[in-house]
Image 1: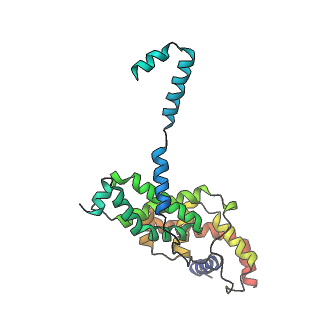
Image 2 (image 1 turned 180 degrees about the vertical axis):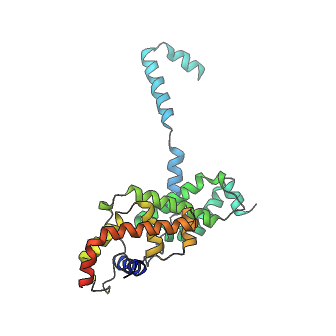
Image 3 (image 1 turned 120 degrees about the horizontal axis):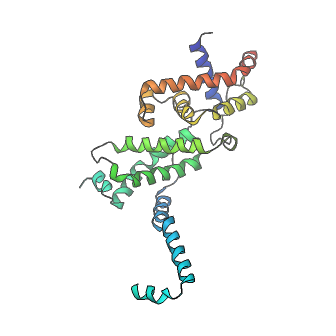
Length: 74
Length: 175
């Protein structure tokens, strides 16, 4: 048996084991899921914002005298 | 302004219109690669999320369908790389009961396992070419490689599969 025939045989075996997908029809509208994904990303806070907030909180605990100054500048 | 121009400018209504126009086709392409309807739905949303994020880079005079298919193929490839074969053996689209009786369930399981163990980039191309029988030029366009490289990947995938299945060949001939 030559290589080409071997390949054909292998392809036939493969298609028996994993037949082509027949049902490729989408069963539902995915737009609501897409909207949720877009909303999630809009609400996502970057990690450096959390680091900044944590650093500010730590600084205020160590230097409570800075709180009035911070409030004045806000 | 045209729909694609409005999309590229960040108009959400234009994005929704494109999503509704193309979601079925994108899903249909992905499900044939990943063979899992749930994962294909998630990957369709992931594809459109990537499309939305990259809208600034989209050429409004270009082919949205081809661009979407390329991004969908990349998302599917990432999924194949991420999901380990051991956890992926549950196939949403099992063999029909009227399949060739010469091919036993044990052999079918071995072939499936061998195929799932192929490196993702070879598996993707082999799935589209050998199982789904997509034209090489369409695979090349979707993957973003030349037709010659598609042929090379198929050749290598077949060689790897043949290696894995060599010990089964005698069993197949005996049946």
